[in-house]
Length: 481
Figure 1 (cartoon, helix red, strand yellow):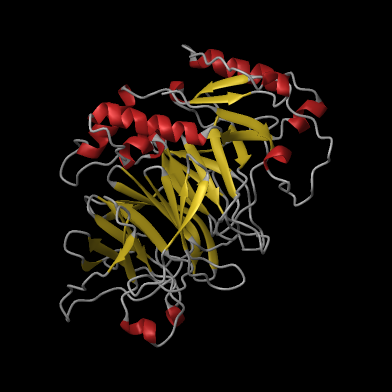
Figure 2 (figure 1 turned 180 degrees about the horizontal axis):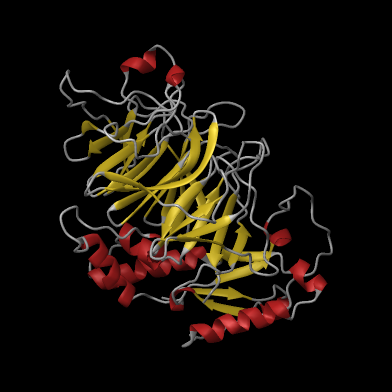
């Protein structure tokens, strides 16, 4: 399947530039043509240049916010709650292919109230939301867990099956939530007047039973922590930074889900002390973006940690690309095959069926094309798409082009990748599904859509924010093709 994306100037994409100023009326378009084949990417090094894009939002869309929660599932990104000038109670689905937002119901009894600094994870077509309630006497008696059925698009009332004598987690903010196999793991968070917590909770999705993991028997571990990040790779969880009491941290911890043991991964280099940042898995590494030592000092650095070499590398920005935004308390969502976590079972190193399916799909992947070309009328006609057999050849062309830019051209090259012809892609996808299943009816496959998207990192919202505007959406693509 071929799918085009246009690289256009930031001024053409959005009447507001990244610094909040309006562009000049006579800004010049690009004067070069580059073709990217996302699915011919070779394995990337830590020096991979990143290409940043601000995606303009039109039509109904959520307002700008921070301390919200988001997660991706299939070809969609879900955004819930957060804070603008007050706590928000709204729920949105972002269609990545069409660049469109749809507001989902969040007013029923089973839906959450206003939330901030909560968590949201996806597992087998269901979203699990935890924590983030405004502290009150009421929150002491309520388990802050909500469940949303993605297929039915409705909140589900779940029955607390925990015996009365069993402990359940209380409300908290700034914790982390990850998924291993068929369970959600919650670490830390800020609990009302008790400050940072080091509680480590497990929720079994099959039984909806909570259990508290004992992390107090050893002095080794991250300790009380909130406003940190956590993600998973294979059978381990990786936790970085955050606040321990009132002190910012820059340590990286690994928790092994098989041995239930913590280990600190010391590094001589890497990010500085950070809170309010985000991490996602990317192939055999972790990407870390944004955050700051305080909420008043947001940063725009993109780091990559290699699980293989256990080293950090700071990713450069492609020459001429938009600089990445300074963000703290934002959300990041990875899309495409490279952002799908590889997992193992807790009893063997054999990949799970989900990993096997992903590998099988990767071998039959359909090329997803990205096109960079001038937006003058002379080039608006038919575009010939070519498949590059050598990833090195394409990278050389990109570097040669960027190195040959003059100063003015570099400014005009403040551009980025954005989707073009989304409707055609959606229609073609539906037609191919009808042909493949022989039913004559469109078949929506979240897994198929996710596997055929390009590898993209989306950054949504965060501080600093401009009030009374729609949520900011940035897209990052690694350019070492």
